[in-house]
Length: 214
Image 1: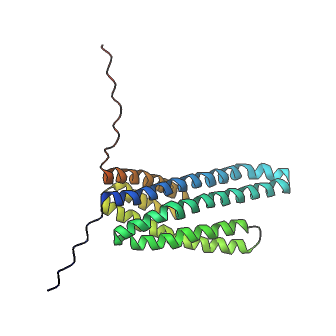
Image 2: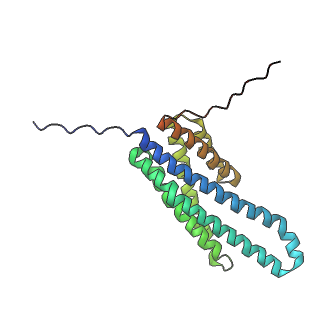
Image 3: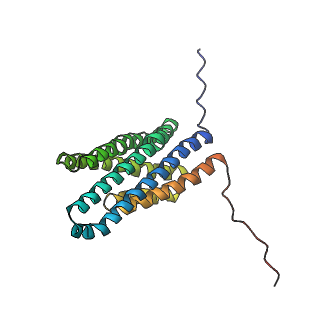
């Protein structure tokens, strides 16, 4: 009889930690890009009326500034997705095939949706930009579905409620954008906890100082 092949060893904690680290770094870049775009939109909101009184040139300048901010935020998002977050999810899916669906949806939806969003923002002055942004929104919706699945799966694996809350916030974020921003922050925090668990690093305890005598 032929000897049976040796069983595949289970993935090590270091493998999970590397996947989580990439995802966490990507999440941080996505948080930064969201802040950048959010600040631009808020500034536009409070400046549009004064600019309207100042004339067409001022309004056009505000629109161009917003487009530039959207493009910069989109580029940072692409770096965070393609350079960090998606490779981390792909590594996680290679370790644990249960994450394969979320990997596919995130890769197709978030990455290509962001690219089309940048193209749409750059061509927003002409009519075609509107249609490109609509397609981008559909792809981003697919990507967020992948994020929701990822959050649920991570909650099952890591038994960390922050993943579950982040997934719920990503669902709400489809309709209310600020919820997605909070979801990314919670995902960032939860991934930090998972990295510490995977590497066996205890959480940092607060410094204890001696109490002065009464």
